[in-house]
Length: 359
Image (cartoon, rainbow, N blue to C red; front, top):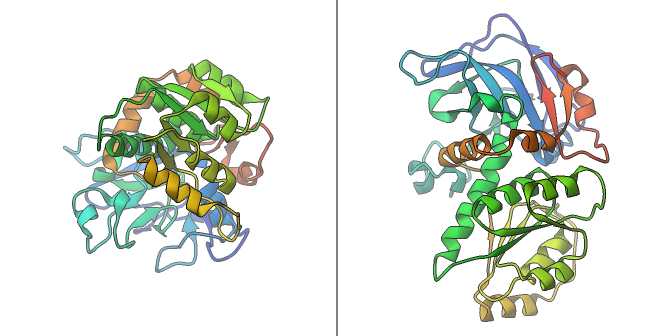
């Protein structure tokens, strides 16, 4: 946190101490040359945030014990450098990752989401304060302007970047040969799964979404999107659908391996969900290897996003049904009641913490 004067409220945590989340008062951020000063509107809560709160992941800035949480950002510009292309009142989001200081070859070419040496930093996650503050600064090179009609749903940009990148990677892999996919299966109907379905439909695919729940908002959201909802086992759904592409968004180990085994020849499985470590599962490793080799199948992992993906995500959301996007946000929790946002409710899809006093 660079130079502070008065005081703003921010959601902070000690990543080394479980259940240390609290609202702290911090001095006002002072933008450096080339920075935007942004009024925080909201931050989304995801699994990574919950891991940080449980002290399972995350790193505070090198000079401090506590980290300002929040990487799914939404804010409104208060001040902008002259000639920056930004203006006061602009709706913006901040990019999460910053390239490593060396940099590696990928970071040097703007592909910092594919960092090769792990020395990247991340807002709200790894060694950089996040966006969970009533005021925050961001470099103009790491901010993206949003369509004003996204004022209530723009916090979905960051998770959308994850799936935009995932689909980009799927296409790049598929085009190693003739590639004309028709059907896609998305496992998991959380925010990532639903947004993956949205992008898959935009690519012209027949999209099927699999989740275990049979009631609540998820089946209705899938249906309203124009996709097909399933709650059977992965193998039974895959046998009927025969997906050319599977986007795995649960991180459940059994679902991951069922997904890998479910594609027809020349199938692609993209893993976006992170499985918890330390849990064992018996699998037929030889059979999986045999299937991958003999069917020219591919399994890829995808995480994070670069500036290109943020711009693409902003465009995807701007061209989407705002009412449908609003349906993904199941609860908006004021900053004062932040603990409620970390307590799961049965019908939760995406929970958002509001920073501007709204509920």
